Length: 263
Length: 237
Image 1: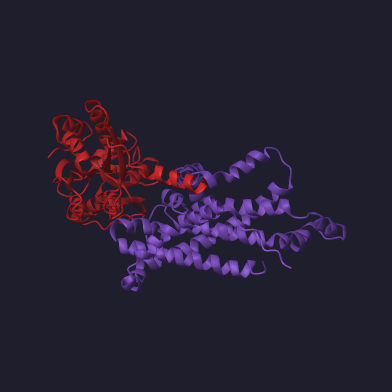
Image 2 (image 1 turned 90 degrees about the vertical axis):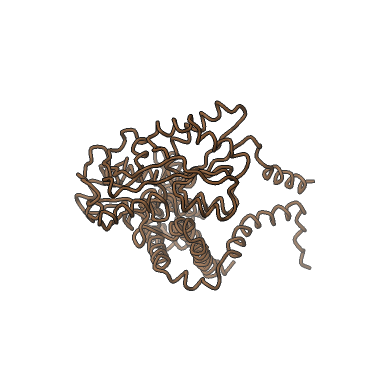
């Protein structure tokens, strides 16, 4: 005989449903405003096409950079003892609570055109980050990478480390253990971290407009295009917003099905 | 009982603001002068609490037309004001209360050696304008067109103050802002005049959106209000 799970308290159900309405309400308002008959022509304008392309390219590049740097950082935080570790972790988490505009201003002062690092970068490599697509990627890495670090660090700290010990005792080198034991064991969390990072990068607004500016085709991502369009052509803004919702929902649902279908 | 508590919290959050609060939506080029206006008005009107909401005029228009609470609207552009008027949201007719002109702003010391409007077509310089949707962007493009310059901006900022900030910190070599923004920047930028034959005269209309806002509008139009406007570099109609 199977036991049915106990019925949840009524108050819990009410609050839970209310919680969902907080998300679903604004989305409904957005969909209700969509100018369906003009949607096709609104989405085919160069501004929208450029913004979508730029958003996808920049967010994927930012996710790649954040993974390449964030995974090792998460490993250090989870497994290696070093001085000032708690402070290090707090600094890594900071972009999660910092207003993105502050992050953008910090980036300007650190690697802007007039900063020592920015001048060095420009004189040696010719690379100027503000007002360029690289600046967009930089802003997105800054705000999105904590999601990867937090998720992966939690998984590394929580996994059963005896498997790694066994592999090492059987003669596996450190890289082999990492590649064949550790990474496969944290794969679901890593995937979740990558998706969260991408999602945050895709929606980035404040740091981008502060650090990289706003020019169609170079730095104007979908969120920036929505912001500017809201002031001139509301139908276009709604169409752009719908596009963002569709792309994000599509990727999130698609990835979830692929990676978590076993659950 | 617990759901009742939740409802109570929601109702409390939706309760109307106190009626002696006057919400003023003002164009971002009015940032400093309206802060002074707020202080002066509150001094002469006991109990009044002026709250100023700043933004690009077009963003403010969007907020107002979508039903955001506001008692006064001060726009940097007559066309944007007429949108709000034709939507039937203005209680008294709009009045022009100030005028403004354009200026070329450069970082202190003018490190890139910008000389005038012609430099705005130089792709090697870092040039910023306001987005064409906001008045300062529209006026700047009108001035550049009159001077026969096709601009190559590296950024189109959503409002004039964010443009000014990027010039102040030296990220941009030059940008076109309002004359009063240069006054407000108080030495943090250097400036050049836009020659009179290319300059655009921006007229700022103000309107009360309901009865609560009428006192503040009258104050802005009064001799005391005009003195404050003059002090911040605005022209008077």
